[in-house]
Length: 302
Image 1: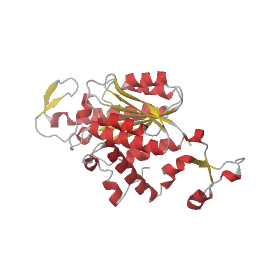
Image 2: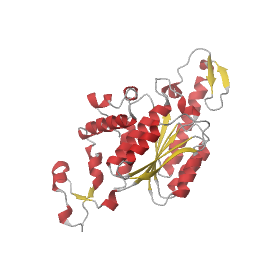
Image 3: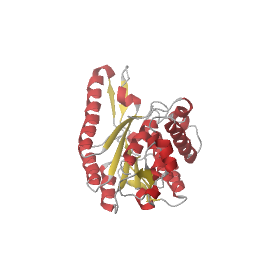
Image 4: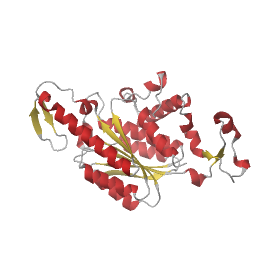
């Protein structure tokens, strides 16, 4: 169950406020530090990044490795991990195809996805994990290989800051390419509106999963795409093909909402069967839910 930041912390997770901050680095720092401030005050403080360096004591462990300061705070025995136990290779994949340019609340799906990707990279870096970044439409357009070297986070954030909207989407293609190139198990985070052939996308995700990779899929949809609030005769334009159609919303609303519900249910059901975390994200909402979902997946590797 995701935590909810309160008061001041939640302000810093509001995408409309994040958009007003100048640099991607400052956006990421503001989001993550605000999130962690709320996390430390919540019942979920066991997910805090400081615990990424520890695992619970197991029979046979050297008693001298117990961290008594952590015990005093958590009332549980934890031992500090060796560095090779803690480091995880993480890949953040962001869809930059044309449909990601839609936004009804002043924030496009691409902007929201870039804020979330930057925040995740910042959080991963704080955990001393190796962070990599891929942006794609129907091809990979940006690739920053994973690294935990000092200064690498800035390379990821610079790449995010230079993104531009692409063309048609092919979500499966980078998934297969990444699966074929992986040399070690890690975590892959996919940020996309998934407006592509679901069967092909699911197959690409399964390819990665069968390589032993943990995967979190954030399905980014605008609030209007989830609620279809239109009432008057409206011209709808495909942002990837530029095809247009006039429609009376009252005549198509039920069918549209049924189709989008079927799409979300298909992803949730089929990905869940192979152990892939699927999270629907309304891009009008704060980023805390997505960050908590990632930390939950990350904690299972400890």
